[in-house]
Length: 529
View (cartoon, rainbow, N blue to C red):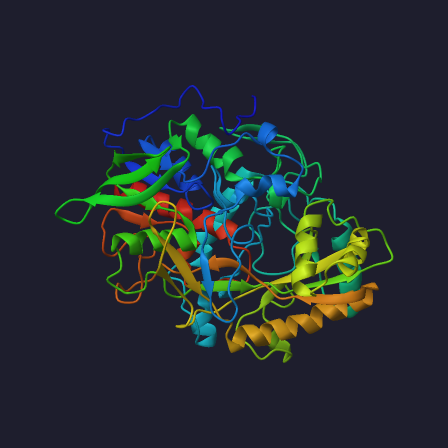
């Protein structure tokens, strides 16, 4: 069976008229929207997905050039405020058919059960209204098998797996091998990481064959081979095969509603023209910035006052070093090695903060690295040129830490307008004491690893990763925007499916959990309809 390209609709695909009353409109085609779209289409529902960005063919449109791939990122201006303003663009947002998965690292570790119980365990953040073992883990199993996740046979952290990864782990690149060496020397356990990139040729029912990873290292600038399980070559291809329609370059601006408050049509702009797609239900899957922005612009789903509140970001401190060995940091899957020994480091008395973090080896492309040196160390001119002459000998480690929600971190609409005349979002972000303590602890741990591995010229790059929160899920309409299945408390036929609904940040990358919640929301919707 041939592989379906992202631009090739199957024979079963169809096109709907805007006057048709479709069963559902899905806004956004990333990790939150794509699995849901496929599930509804497989159930025979009439579904249309609206994607703000373009549709590209990876085989012909993706260049092996970082600068040429900027079209993968959400390039509309977002305003950052606070003492630790968040970086947007390449770091925290994407656009196009496939959303941010077009440039995510394919890093797919599972959350652990206690990640969902931060309030019970520490008295901070909020517990998830979801049971890990019965409502999350089965979807993890399903998604890993469908995507063809490559992972270890034995993983030393978290609950024992009920199902093996479908493929063995990818080869460890230079940074991963160095982290493995240093971690062993200081007594920290490591494991090859789980990655949604194929270590071998893989057949997906309903999609076709995908070829194995060539280790070109361009995961964060777009995979041209289809080895990385971005949504365009996985769930969206499946959705199209079952009759879903995907409309690229379709920017949603507003909704039409009836006298009961139900959404009857989604209004969007495509190629300068305004259209309205009639529908029975809406799934808003635009991410933790655009989802609350759209709700605030339209003044809906916010009786709780929580839309835009509870902004969180993962602590993402990076520690870089130079080595005698040739590393070639541009080769291989960027995040090849993981350790979760610091998932709850306070258990040994070494930490004074809530939650925990994972450790991950990181590869890096040259343009990204030179920008970080200029910003992180302040090098310029000959000094910067000299540092980049050693690029092939650098390697990094970073953390992914559980950030907490604070009242001072939130999203609002600014007075500035974008090119469409809509208010730009302004996001306030300042790390709390918990994040500062976590970063300090991680700084010591990572420097010890690199010292043991033989690193020289070690330096730190403070950063945050992933914007999370802003439309929290919960049991009470007074404290949350949506219920445990992502359904709005205020608008009965509106669902939200993205990481804006996370009650806490988790101490792992969010993509796998976003997909799990997406399928869970879809299944709940199908049971109710």
